[in-house]
Length: 111
Image (cartoon, rainbow, N blue to C red):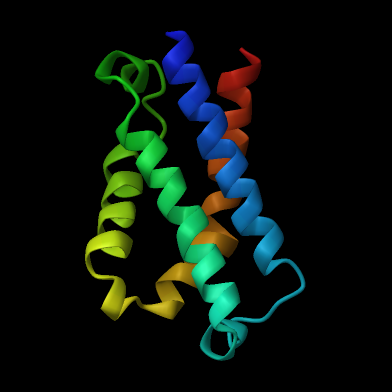
C-alpha cells in the first residue's frame, strides 16, 4: 500500500473514532435535539467517506472486505443532501457500522 493510501486509512480510522466518541453515552434522540452533536457526527462520517474516496484503486483492492462503495456513497449523501439527513441512518452508522469498520482499518494499518 502506498504511503498516501496509508495516511488516508489513518484519517478514516481517526474520524471513525471521533464519531464513536461523540455518540458514547448518548441516545438516538440526542441527534434530534443536539444540533452540535448531529453536525459533529455527520462531519466525522463525511471525513471517513472523503478519505475513502481518495484511496487509490490499488489500495482499495488490498482491502476487499471494506464496503468502499457504501462508505463513499454515505459521504456523498451527507454532503450533497445535507438538507435531508436521516438521523436514524446517521445513528445506525455511528453506533453499528463504524465499530467493525474501525476493527478492519486497525488490522490493515497493523499489517
